[in-house]
Image 1 (cartoon, protein in one colour):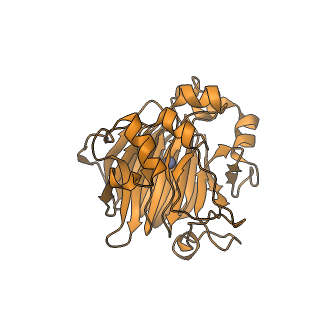
Image 2 (spheres, rainbow, N blue to C red):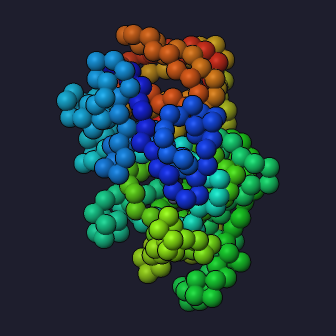
Length: 317
Ligand code: ZN
């Protein structure tokens, strides 16, 4: 029964910007901050506890110490920690890529596949991203277009605005476009198959590796399947909107006006990722938060209050 503030792990991929430091107050020495991993037990970048008696422990160490019970009963079916939550600042285009599903990833990569969801936190005017194909194409056409560099003629470019949501099932071809800042909720996986990288080179001066054959194995050659539109629900002191619910995560956008009473029941922990505003979270103790903070609330904490004016993404399993 507790609330923990988390410190993220950072990534300085070549396409990143500086907004996570400039606008979200992230403290990090890297010149570019492409990603902050805000809720992570992944070996490639773990979140750590910030403050309190568990200060400095990684999230996985905390779970090891306190037992898997703090994750909730809905996590029993997962051998590893199920999800990974990131902020992503795309100053430049990300590569065109695809992720495998669980079956393929566990067989070939030894980790989970990746279904993910994007919430557009902010974007430049005219920003677009790539989301599936305009229409169904054949395997032969896919292979030919990769070969002759014409893939982008058949992919679906979507203009975006703040608050838009994209549900990206494993197998959906996708790319975040430049000028977009995203909150990403995903399965706990770091397996990405790159298909097209705009001819760029990595920090070592060489083209970044592509994974064409694996991408051909796993890409769904058809339009993406968005999550159905959901209504905004008026609650007492706040509104909530279901962004997506799948077998791995359930995510809501919350707009809190003054106070919201929320709950972490015995089934799942809760993560709150604060995108705007500030306030206090009140459980057994009071913890202040501001824009950019990530809070981990253990399962069975019961009711807790969030006071302040803020927008946050709430995720549970
Ligand atoms: Zn992705």
